[in-house]
Length: 110
Length: 115
Image (cartoon, rainbow over all chains, first blue to last red; front, side, top):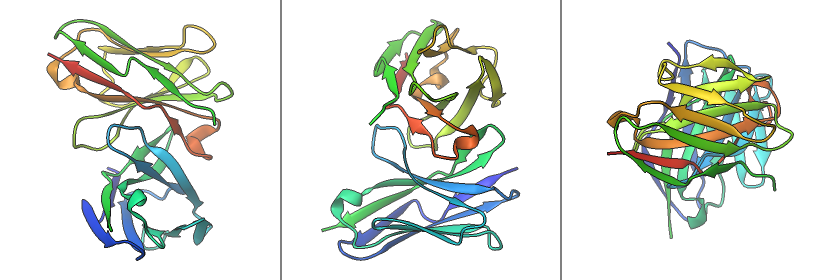
């Protein structure tokens, strides 16, 4: 069955550094992949979508890459700030829905 | 910025009781979803809804669950006879395109506590 793995449950990064989060998937080749941010007690918030024919997508300090050969997406936050602390979710479209990974809790340390 | 609105924000119910969770999706969106998140676990798909019918449902979405779009704006999730294990955050989402090509917009959720 479809599996989405996000590399670590929690990641601590010093303020100002680049945070890199990993999403790996198996048994499926999605047409595109999405990244969401979730704060405690809140719903996921859509950040970026990258299509299978795109290698890289940028939005302000965010950058996403998509390697369909490795079945992997990397999510980067450059010049990280304490306000970037949250859980980041990778999601794949499948049939009439998207399915989420468990997420990586990112802590940006001042 | 358009929002998905969910009510109530918190619902406490006795085991075996029926609950209805309400959502107002974004007005020009055509696709509607319910997801749930048990504390500390991942966001899980329950059901998708398009053109006034269910387009897909998960194994979790058994006969105890139903969805309805009773008018042009509301989208509801009913749990007929709640169990302790139904305690979770329930999120409604909507999208303007199939498979969320422009992303899904989620509501802030309803925290359901079954006692």
